Length: 77
Image 1 (cartoon, one colour):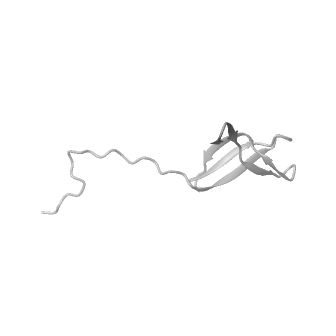
Image 2 (tube, helix red, strand yellow):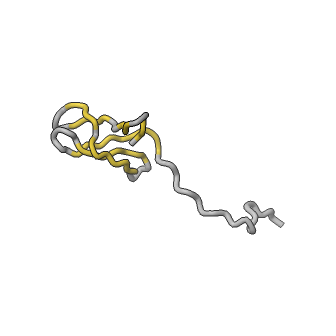
Image 3 (cartoon, helix red, strand yellow):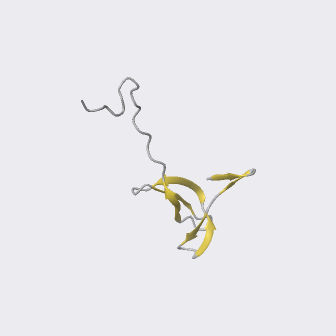
């Protein structure tokens, strides 16, 4: 969900049952197995599950913290 001004913007998706583009109701952002983001929600008319794939990959997981006492690149002796 993105916020524009004073209201929330819900993305449009294609309802296969109604055969029309409609706003996705109760949309939840999810991350698919391949790392891409998607929004899953319901059609406002018939209640069928709607799914829209968003552009781009999800942000990578944070790396493990680095120990400052240990040098990052030890020099060979």
